[in-house]
Image (tube, rainbow, N blue to C red; front, side, top):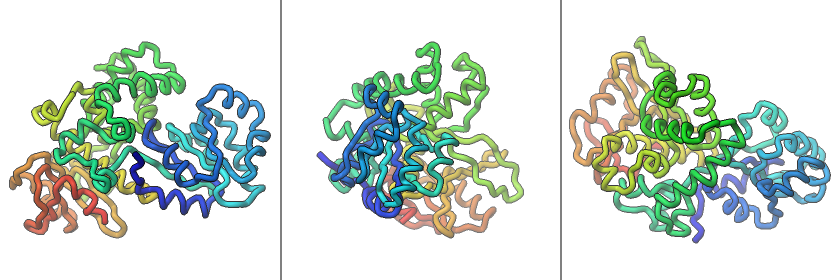
Length: 386
């Protein structure tokens, strides 16, 4: 079963305009399937294969010369020295769509690689399915909590796999191996405890000292592990909005998972009934909404201009989105019945900032306007941005 990806036209367009196209994203987000569908005439090579990887590392120029009409190179981050040769070869050929690179780590975070490819590469990211992609094929569940626990990784839908089995295998076969290759993790059970603690931080401010104490490692280790999870598209850190309006603001970022199914797994939440009664329900619902906003932007080939706003007296707006010239304030509530308390943060923001683009996303069913606030059900998240 192939579900059409929203980003596919952007990838195709990039291949006609740039000599190099980079598509990164988490393991099992569908990168290989997408690239082989968008570029069916290009050979496919994966550097996951140890023999191929050794050959490419030993003679990268000979490897590239075998593909005069271009090639898809999967898991390209395994041979970092290849990128300099790709730069030289793409300049020599001077044609679009020569090298299509994919990887499960954000290899462009490497300064040497980003310098090599500067000005030559279209940078795109593919995350697990968005609700719009699932809705278009009738795969979206009507129960929001069922969607959140099930998660959005393509293989769950292709093979109809039980989430607990999928995420357990995902952690054991992909994350553990990748992280060991990237970093000396020492005791793996300590790292697993760290990820579980991160899941408990979903939608909360990151407290490095608290995470370090609870995990039993140094603060610098926590920083390194957070960077590792971020580069592997497991988590992302939402920064505070820069405009203070003469208020003292919090400086710490908030932590979210790109997939609430994976976060639920690490929290031990096995089904939607457990999630609905969990104290993490509100935090994971907020996580779900913020991640969907991020997916929307990535699927347009753009970086998401997402932030949150909170002052030192805990006045807060869950998500601030810079949408072109507009600034959208988004409050997120898991409740299904509208309550006047839901609007307090937005109304405070309006008085303070003078901005009137106010949105409330909640767990209910109806869409409406109330007191100048656009109220959207969870299925209509992307309407904020369209």
